[in-house]
Length: 468
Image 1 (tube, helix red, strand yellow):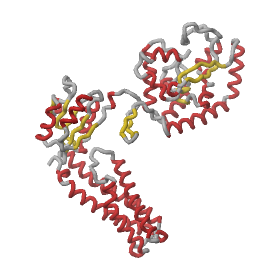
Image 2 (cartoon, one colour):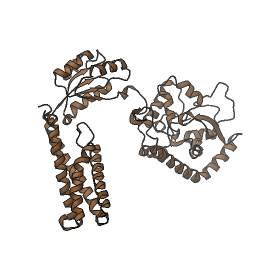
Image 3 (spheres, helix red, strand yellow):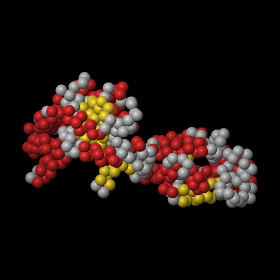
Image 4 (cartoon, one colour):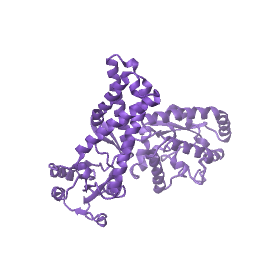
C-alpha cells in the first residue's frame, strides 16, 4: 500500500475530471444567482449553453494544462495559478464560440467574471480538501513513494532532510548512493547505503522503487554518463536536481536559452525589470538630494578652498558595472601630492589629510558628489563601494569571488558600510569580510533592503572608529 493512489492513477484522474466539471457547473449556477438574482435557466439561453460548454471544455483543457499530474512535492501556488489560467482559457473558448454564432452581445461579461472567480475558488477548494486528506494519509505512513537518492552532497542531503521533515509529501528514502565513501551521515537514518552505481538497477527492480533523485555534483561527469547507461531500462520516475550549491556564485536561477534549460550562475537579482526600477529610483533620489544640498555644496567648496590650495573635487578611475571604468567624484580631503608607488589608503593620523578633510571623512561629506555619478548612471545609491583599481588588482586573486562585486553598480552606501566595514582595510581578513557583506547584499537584494540601508545611513551616517 506504499503508493495506492499511484497504482490507480487513471481511474482517480477520470474521477477528478468529472468532479471538476460538476464543480464548475455548480459555480456557474452560483454566479448566476449572485449576478442575475435568479436561476441560470431563467436568463438568456446563451448563458446555459456556455455553462455546459465551458464546463465540459475544462474536462479537456485542464488535462492538457497539466492540472491532473502529480503535484506531490510542488508548490501549491503554482497549482492555483495553473487552475486559474486553465479555467480562463476555457471561458475564452466559450466566449469565442458565442462570437462565432453571433450571440456574444447577449453574454453578460460580469456573469463570466463572477463565474471565473467562483469557479477558480471552488476548484481550488476541492483540491485543498483532497490534498488535506492525502497529507493526513501520508503522515500516517500510507501512499508513500519509495526513493533512491544518487549523490549525497549538499543537495542530496537537503533533499533527504526535506523528505523526512515534510512527510506529508509522502516520500520515503530507501537507499542512498554516496560519492564520498567516507561520508557516514546517512547510516543513522537506517537507509541502505549503495557503494557502487552498478548495484542501482538491481536494487531498483527488487525493492519496488518509485523514483530516483539524481543529485550528483557538477564535476561527476563520468558517473553521470555511467548512470545514464545503467538506468536506460528503468521504468520509474527519474528526477535530476542540479547541484548548484557546489558552484559558489551569485545565483542559481533556472531559465530557458535557445530552447534549452539553463542555470544563471552570476545574474544578480537586481537585474532586468528590477534593475530598471532600481535605476529610476536612484536617479530620482539623486536629483532630489542634489537640489536640496546645493547650498551645503557651496559652503563645503568655500571651506575646501580656504583650507588648502587645489581643486574642490577629487576625481579618480574606478571599476563600475561589469568592470567598466568610470570617474568617481569626491570632495578633495587631502593636500596636493603625488603617489609614487600606486595608491596608498588613508591611515589614522595621515598627514596628507587636511584639517577640514578630516571632518569630511569622519562625517562622509566627501562622498556627496557621487550623487552626480548616480545621475550619470555610473553608480547606484546602494551597492558595494568602489575600490581603487590597484586594490582590485591586488585582491582579485587573493579573495574568492572578489570581482563579482562588479556584477552590480557600485554604491554611495552599502550593506558592508552600515555594518562598520568602511575606511582602511589594512589586512586581508578585513577586506575579505567586507567582500562577504557585499556578496550577501547582491544575493539577497530587495527594494526594501535598499530603503533600510538608506534610512540607516541617513540616521546614523558612516561615522565610526575606522573612518579616517
